Image (tube, rainbow, N blue to C red; front, side, top):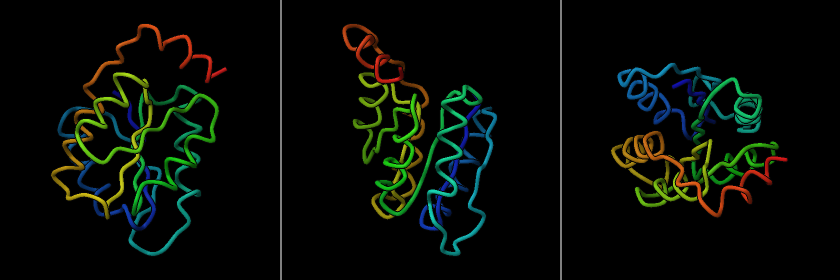
Length: 142
């Protein structure tokens, strides 16, 4: 799978670990930045990821910050994006299964690294269930 990833300074440490996990699993990963823990504005890195996913250049994306809230809000402002902020395994499963999320947002300050890695794996392996929600979800993209 082609996956885009980005973080601000507060999500940088977990981003490096997630990239390693994704590459080990055979995914093609493009890192949109940031490249350190030096303070930056998350919008600078998150918006281009969302635009790339919306344009069909990537199948999915992962964005990270301190809480993940600002990152999810920024991504969801782009037409065609359904970014789910996830904090546990079940929220990751449901955001894919019922909401067909194409971007995952994580907060490094909200969970430990094993949880972030497990959420990422679930997000990438859970299929959208389709059904009665499909038309409503797709209408949001128009």
